[in-house]
Amino acid sequence: MGRIKRSTGAALLAGAVMASVGVFGGNAVAATPAAKPSPKASTPVAAKTGASARPSAAHPSGPPMLLDSIVPRSGSTVGVAMPISVVFTDPVAHSARAGIERHLKVTTSVPVTGAWHWFSDTRVDWRPEKFWPSGTKVTLNAGLTGVGDGHGRYGIHGYQHSFTIGSDFETTVSVPGHTMKITHNGRVIRTMPMDAGSPKFPSWDGTMAVIDKQREVRMTSCSVGITCDPHNPNYYDLTLPWDVHLTNSGTYVHYSPADPYPGSSNGSHGCIHLSLSDAQWYYNHVEQGDPVTITGSPRGKAAGDNGYADFDLSWSQWLAGSATGQQTTSAS
Image (cartoon, rainbow, N blue to C red; front, side, top):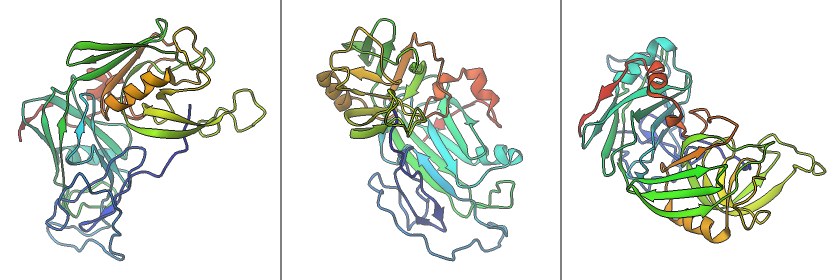
């Protein structure tokens, strides 16, 4: 099903922070003494009006290059499939990608092989070749001061985000088998009956990292382009509980009163339905970045930037979108 979307991201200017949690669930924190990274930094702070970059050797003449968001949030603990996702406010020229990647330095507590990948001219993600090792400490140092975006804008300060990879909590959904299996650090801890999307509205296949979760979400057929006509049999406008968010296009794992005893038929509009008790248990245990892999659906894999489905790309596909190629991180 689809949700009512909220605004996204944060724009930062001259060391001041504007942070609002949106569909990406993150914020960008300037690496300056006046703006120390904090996992609790979620209250919007207005940027100074009229602030601009002053020409100097470190700050070339031109408007500032701003970031909309950096995910995950600094200080957070996330799942093993969570990428680092950096979103720019304005487009970055193809010619400037390599220079920007070289100034986005990822360090880790243990060596990890990974790479940057540009999904668009505003979004670049870093992911490891395989899932993160549990317990890894990760830091992104974005030394963007004086770095150009190829369109006349220049970075005017740096950013730093540090986070931790939590336990290996993985979910595997078999659409034809009507089962959802949960493993924790490699051990099966729970298997649940589930139902997936109908033949007309099949669920996505592939691996999607959890975007976020909410106790209740209002879901409407109009918000995802199915129908806005209340007389259409596919119309819905419902507030549903225990919602785990998988894609920007509106895929969730949740409970639906229209399917209270799942396990035998696929009739949703693409979401994964669990019983009320299973949905609550799952909501209480899963976290942002935990991988959910759906198999056996005819729809095909979700696009890598449909939320955080980065692992839907093969490693060769991932490297094809990188300007600097594969790298092995050094210790933080």
